[in-house]
Amino acid sequence: MRVNGRREQEHTIVAVVYNPVRVDVPRVRVAVEAAAAAAAATAGRGIHLLWLETTPEEGGQAQARDALDRGATLVLAAGGDGTVRAVAEAMRGRDATLGVIPGGTGNLLARNLSIPFASVESACAIAFAGETRRIDLGVASARWPDGTVTEHVFLVMAGVGIDAAMIAGARPELKRRFGWLAYVDAAFRALPKATKVHVRFRIDHGHERSAHVSTILIANCGALPGNIELIPDAAIDDGLLDVAILQPASVFGWLAIWRKVTWENRVLRKSALGRRIIRFTDRAVRTRLSYLRGATVQLAVDAPEPFELDGDAFGDILNLELSVDERSLRVTAPPAL
Image 1 (cartoon, rainbow, N blue to C red):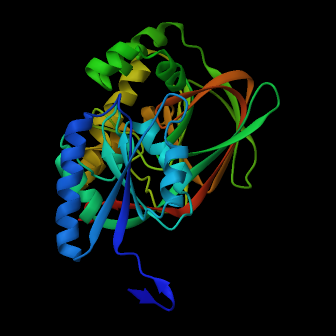
Image 2: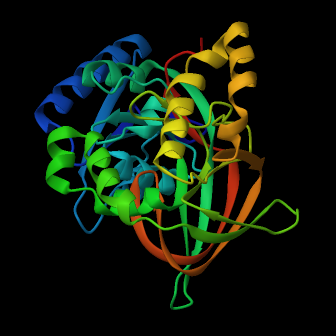
């Protein structure tokens, strides 16, 4: 059929960018093909699937760009947070939609969008037939010790301090066997030798501040594995970044933070009585965990420090400039409650 002198595409092109190390490829193929068949039957239009495998050298960006160049309007990222982040970076501002088939350690974006990460079949069904949402992308411009500057996107959060050291120190064999619990092992090994990091930071056009921190996190959304609601007010489509500054003075300070992010933030704050309890008990925790918010964040350290994006170690930096590319990515997700 021709429309306005051009041949109308007779099928929809859907690409699957998959990490063969992180997902059960045969199971993903069966689930994707079943969801595609159901979507095609509903739409009355064929779906052509492109299967693009990631490699250690090309983690998803090149494959996603190839898919877009070949006309894909839906790109499924099947893998861990690194695969999802790489595909999203290539899709930034493009006229296509991202679907997530989680299969990694943290599944951070999936958790924050309520995409099931324990059922490949359910995730595939949502990827093809879920609600399309526009979400923000965080943009991190990193200055390295050699003076070079590189730009990267992130979907969930960037971090400098013990969290980045913990991620860099996570044992690959434990990640494969036990998922996010590997980071608990890394945390226990990192904490005894951790020292505070002196950071200087500026939110939007405010005054420069400085602090000695265990970790500073700049987040696009706030839920982490293990029922951790690190930043409960963070929203993935508000055009803002949320900053969490962790400054515990001892192991008891870490325990107080743990209680806050697993109990207060996740449970107590959801009821009027719980919020009253928090007001009476939260004063001491505020000196150990504080929150800020803004559209841009500038961050500098005195000596090279490791930093991470969405749970992946990126190396040692001296400066970070972070901003929001507001609602620049389309994703499929379960219908909003």
